[in-house]
Image (cartoon, rainbow, N blue to C red; front, side, top):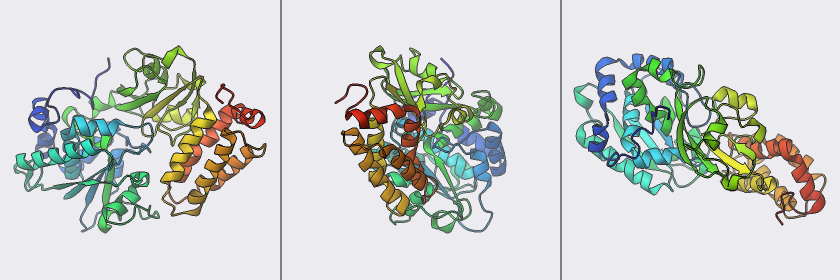
Amino acid sequence: MPELIITKDIDAPGLDTLDGYRQHGGYEALAKALKEYRPDELVELVKKSGLRGRGGAGFPTGMKWSFLARNDKTRYLCCNADESEPGTFKDRMIMEKNPHKLIEGVIITSYACRISVAFIYVRGELALAGRQIEQAIEEAYAAGYIGKNILGSDFSLDVIMHRGAGAYICGEESALMESLEGRRGYPRLKPPFPAAIGLYGGPTVINNCETLATIPAIIKNGAEWYASFGTEKSTGTRIFCLSGHVKKPGNYELPLGTPIRTLIYDEQYGGGILDDKQLKAIIPGGSSTFILGADKVDTPLDFESIAAAGSMLGSGGVVVMHEDTCIVDAVLRMTEFYRDESCGKCTPCREGTYWLTEILHRIEHGDGKESDIALLMDICDNISGKSFCPLGDAATSSITSSIKLFREEYEYHIRNKRCLVGKL
């Protein structure tokens, strides 16, 4: 079993309380950061560790911190815990089982970036996670880890937990800021980027929950220690959310670079395909990433290898589909999600996702036309790269990749008015 960083002691009794967290070394990294490092030194330390964002894009965390505009405006930190990507459930686990690890990461990041106000934006449906974060913030304030002159230093910070209202679009960083400011969650035009003009017009850092929960271990053990895990360009470990047709779905922390096969088939992790059927397809990073065929099962789970295979590591949501899966039906379900979650701000996404769903629905239910496959690809071309935010791109990923890999299933649906795998 490889060494665990984020999920170490995750099931220890009482870990979700302040006393329980401190019994396992909690807040030692914060004390070390305040005592031994100046803010800019912490930024360089995180840069050296190679930590990359765990929310989707995989941008280098320390570099993002260093982009903050140097002016006299108030700086803000936004923890993006609006975990809404289908197939992803790691941030929920962190907040529910070890909320203080996230809080400690938020405080250290705020100190490193000279931030005085931090927000934790929690997906509205995650009721327990929200309560756990609220409780952890209260305990941290009472113990002097948040507030004025933290641990006797000259650093002060306020941390505020904000519940979302169930909009997928608010996982997009600019829509998240719009929501925090009390407006409808519409994405903003970029540039300017949040590091220059973000929340309330101030320089803003936006990091994913898992990213921030990783910071204490890096501070405590050093950049070289963290970089010893994973690969040269994809350092460290990350939590993979394994779901779909596997015997043991769940969250598994593995070093980056571990083959997909290990995650799916190893008895410590997925334990193999459900009912011992054949693997058909893999979604490697949540439903917004391109589908991979079974021939890619030995691809290492790191940013570069998954990109070379034709997809993205994304949010770490690995969805497995076996031989009895109707690809058209699966893609229809995903496209319905993006149709429903489109904010409607831009025409390509608002109109395009509706028509994609209509066409897929008629193919799946025996009313497809020979021209529908080309029409799907044409609509995807008019959405991808032409929408206001990445939601449009996300809506097309499963369609374009599934047609590329499983075109014969679409054609069979259209010609025979039923599913190739025997589904009526």
